Image (cartoon, rainbow, N blue to C red; front, side, top):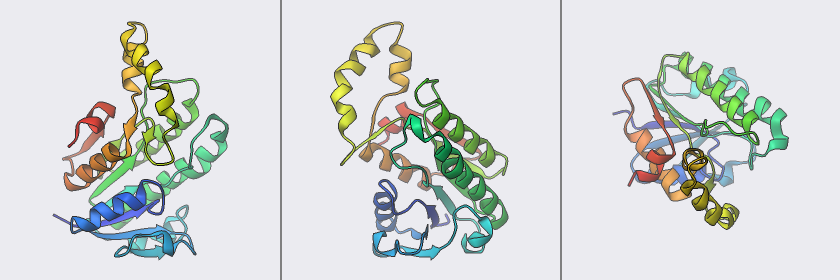
Length: 216
């Protein structure tokens, strides 16, 4: 199995933690970063300074047959960031899809978002769905990981509403939607991503929240 990983968003909340897990598991990890972000990467991770919105700046650095992990996106997504979802989340996914196809990568792991319809975050969901579509068009093996909100250090505030979520799960009219938008811990998310990298699908795998929460 190819043990090379190329990652975007590697200096972020999930990215740094995932890189550490991959390195411990014997993977060779290369991160795409902006100039000046080198110190934010875990030791042992190599990097290139490039423009994540222009595939020509980094396609030559994507190893053939590698696993490409797309984590780049707007930090702290919210309803008021509609324009940024298009110019950062969607555009970077589309550009990465072009790079992956040109480089001949073997597997694309994309952190998307739960697609259960919501009014508050519909623009974010739409952009991630369009990102998925761009990746599918490459024909490369892909895994779409679809959390809703990842709870962890600095991101614990949704736990205040956990009793409300539990009640909604018990009400017949809201149960299905509430369960489809359950919280995911950072530990569960990292385990799911590591599993995704270690186990490329034959074609396409979609990891919904229930699966993310169950992986040990």
